[in-house]
Image 1 (cartoon, rainbow, N blue to C red):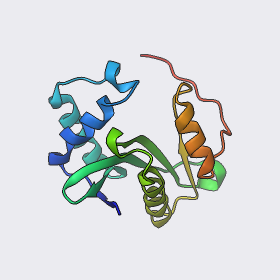
Image 2: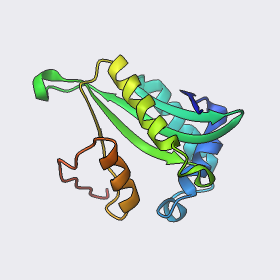
Image 3: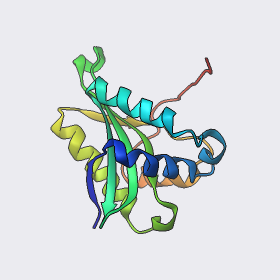
Length: 147
């Protein structure tokens, strides 16, 4: 059983390592830990931006970022945006991802959110099947533009 808890600054290196241990992350992540620590500090200052880690014993085996977004659309509904979902490569296929999403959903409901949203890269076919199994629907088309 994995326990999920808010991450501390000391957890950031383990999270950065999981982000880099990924088919897309291996080319886009950096070894400069100062950028991750600065980002973590900025997330903490925002208040509704949470980094959550999943642990077994003392090992960090999963992580995700949960943002609570206030908006005016949909009758001013609160939304939960989930980002940076990762399970350690040696722990995949053990049900940890489903536990992670269940934890995120619980936190989102507790915060008063009426929906959870996420994006995943079009090349992540396994991730798409995973999210489909958990009841997510590909209801929107996402766009990005580099700045």
